[in-house]
Image (cartoon, rainbow, N blue to C red; front, top):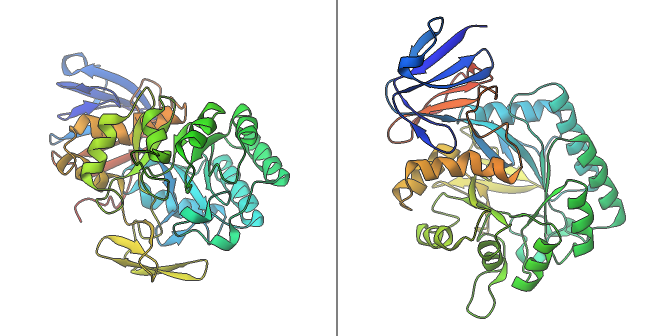
Length: 388
């Protein structure tokens, strides 16, 4: 293996920033972070033009990319295309996401992810199943005809899947899943997120007490915060054990609401970035279909014909720029939201941080958080999507 020292840039390791240091990469693994004066004599020097080296981004809600949707075709080729499109945007670890669909498609999604991981498809680390056990009242772009209560057969399918996959995240609504079902699933290792729900605060707190650990796309498709009824928004912010994904594009959530949520969030669980990306990432397509309905790409947003938001036309670097320039976060706090914080929600120490013997998944950003380069398993990614 060739030892390479990346120099000339600040290094953000997922938690803190290192200056006057070098990132050591030994083949496909991280060798460590050392002061520039301590670079081993046998290392090849790779100078960077300032900016910041950071861990590859971690995205827990990815519906598609590269012109394809996971809901359209649950097979390894689809996952490879999606992962490659997002790697070009700096996301080196992701959960492909199947939104509300039939039991047959859920089974096919589980099989496809299992096969992709066995084939070592770069970037695929597990599966996110978003639905069908949601609330019709907060369906968003999900097909209401497919939304239903969780039955014993669904439980059996998920309990089998969590044995086969390294990570299984499932978004549910308390209206259609009981606290006992949540406890059974989480005891088995399934990560439960609450979303697409009109449930009141108390019901959401009960779900958290039974093992739910996340809220899906905070503020969107959920019961809102009011003076008398805090809803899932209030439960997500008030519950120390509930993490929350956030779509930071200025369309799904206002910058002022994001500032308020970040100030109010009770830890140690935290808010992290997701894209909720559709097939448009890494593609020039202007429209596509979901369940036979056309979704239009216009003015930075994706909508059904009636104007309902249908996922996001977003990548992580764009979200980072929004949350620093419009919300006012420091670059380090923003980078945590795209790296170590989603990894923490997954209880995964192998992604989202630069640690010795970890996978050599990292990115380089310029001073304005535009992506300039991506490495996955130590190899440079081609055709990086930089400035739009």
